[in-house]
Amino acid sequence: MISLDDWPCAAVRNADLGSRTTLRVGGTAPLLLEPGDPEELRKAVVWVREHGHELRILGGGANLIIADGEVPGPVIATDRIRRAFRYVPFEMRMDLGTSKEEEEADPFVEVQPRQHFPESEPAPRLVAWAGASMPGLVGMAKRLGWSGLEGLAGVPGSIGGGVAMNAGGSWGDLWDVIERVRVVDESGEFRDLMRAECQPSYRNGNLGGAVVAGVVLEFEQSHPKVVDEEVRRYLLHKRQVQPVTEQSAGCVFKNPDPELSGGKSAGQLVDEAGLKGRRKGGAQVSEKHGNFVVNTGGATATEVLALIDEVRDEVASRSGVALEREVKFWGG
Ligand code: EPU
Image (cartoon, rainbow, N blue to C red):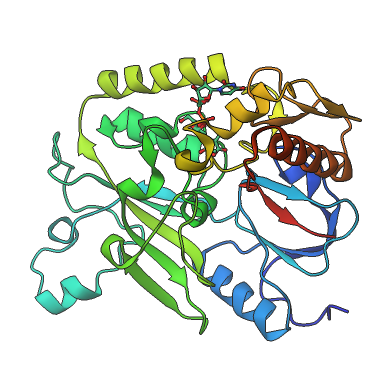
């Protein structure tokens, strides 16, 4: 039983979770903690661990299937921690800075620059707290004319989730544009990890038990028109090959090792097994792309999971390739 008296931040009981995911399936959380800034997130993480619960962090609800019924513990939602702003270099913060002050200047704290930003920045950077939306960041970079995130156009979810799972595609990975990540570490303290200290891999930020509180993203100076064209190009391609207007959790399976699959992607294997359009209740393998399961209306998590198992089994028996689920699952 979760006690009422010592919640670390704003919270609601018996919160609906399905409506907070892009697939729109799943039940409720006995308690939804809603920190409003990184420090409250840190406190919430410590609180959940101290009470002996598993950590469940809900960002933008993409790439996630939540079981029907009640998840067995509290959930921390990051959607109130969504600030994103331009990084202000130290020399633009201070009139006269000492190296000690420079070391202590916290990039995650939003400050007003002392002068206008130059038209062309040598090292353009954005700071984003964990709940900032990826589409929002793509839009910000586009307006500033900064290149680096164009490939993420059309990818839903929050930056915290994107970093934890190393969102990506044929263009590269989100981690390619990360300068540093601020995490709440295993001991419940903030720690800044520079890109070079981390070993992100395919669809995995490899952060262990650390929780993303914020990131600093690095860009190349370009021009709004050029970035806009790139974004449009990605969106157009995406619309052609993926069911972007339907409710889904994104790609269900990881692409298999090309040596084991003869270079075939997960979507292609599902397609060749003749499984596009296969249904279970309201859940359906997308007609457009074999690696998506869409909620055609009123699907349950049970239906979605049964369909995924069926697809995995049929692909294995037809092609001999064991597909591994990419999408995360929170059991009931
Ligand atoms: N294909 C088929 N049939 C299908 C789907 C695909 O034959 O039903 C073929 C395509 O024609 C293509 C190949 O399979 O030759 C690869 O397909 P696609 O270009 O759509 O890319 P993908 O490997 O299926 C990956 C990421 C996507 C990302 C896209 C675009 C994974 C598992 N998927 O998809 O990421 O959007 O590249 O960059 O890595 C996600 O992670 O949720 C996701 C959707």
